[in-house]
Amino acid sequence: MRISDILRVKGERVVTVSPEADVTELLAVLAEHKIGAVIVSRDGDRVDGIVSERDIVRALAARGAAVLTEPVATIHTTDVRSVTRDAVLDEVERLMTERRFRHVPVIEDGSLRGVVSIGDVVKFRIDELEHERSSLEEYITGERA
Image 1 (cartoon, one colour):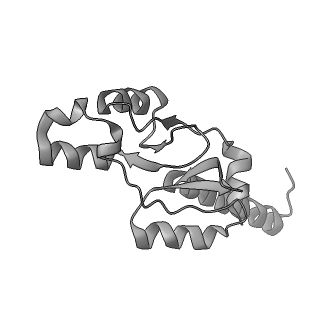
Image 2: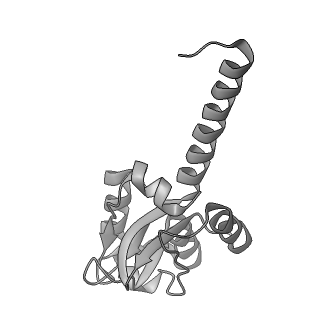
Image 3: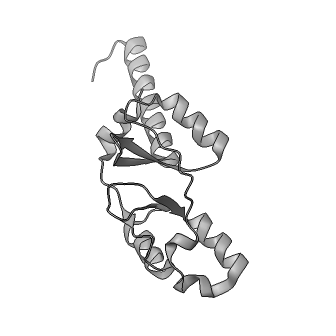
């Protein structure tokens, strides 16, 4: 299985925020879209960074509520690991586990084409296992749905 299989179901829509937006605006974007991380991008096409709920919590713990008026650029991660649509799902799972991050941008020809979260991966794996279970049950019982 490849990342393209997840994007085919999930879609390629990506929420971005400008590095100049303040952290309060970032919080509104996360809440509005019910997501845990957002791509930081000046143009919505190139990845300048990524910022997650964890980044916000760490910044608040270190610097207090003043962080809320700071630009996103002061708290986002700039060393972003990305994958392509052709990336093998097992390798992406390993990357996310070893590097301890939950979101990975999908980039093709230098342009942002999607974001895959650990939740997307888990959902895909559960659906895959459910389909396999159902197929085995049909095989064993001889029943076809």
